[in-house]
Length: 232
Image (cartoon, rainbow, N blue to C red; front, side, top):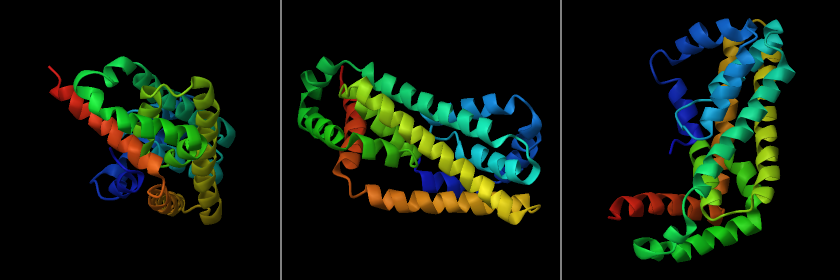
């Protein structure tokens, strides 16, 4: 899985990455289709780690401040809806895994780990979902694990929604405030906002390592993947 800090750092290391923003994202800012593009990109980020949702939302939010296009509130709404739906895709994929299969045959050895994941999510589901939203790789493993252990959808839905709204607010406001502060220097605003988001991700990544449920979810998803490949 691709962690948030690694992915954001890669934006400045991959040749042509900033040109993609300049040539594709920026010209589309005034198009009415930009909100659909943001929605699809953020949704894809929920189950395809390389899709860099932050690098689409933040630059557009900076443009919203500097040039008044795109509009901030529709951008924020598109990002929030895409985030919630993307999390649902990963959660739904986890729910498709047969629970009986996870506790039978070769996979029976995973039962103690399943119990740890269940206990952790039962106790700290909200904190886990909201904090993991800023760490793409861990976000996906957490949502998959929540589905695999049959976490109640009616518990998952509200916290998933809160996580998506908080993330969308943070990313759009980071870009918007940077765009407002740096005025016409749009590129400086974008870079500052992205580095700020990267710093927050680094702090959160360090903090969530203190949560046992995060480690259990990560180990659980990896173990299921490896064990499934070994089964005849």
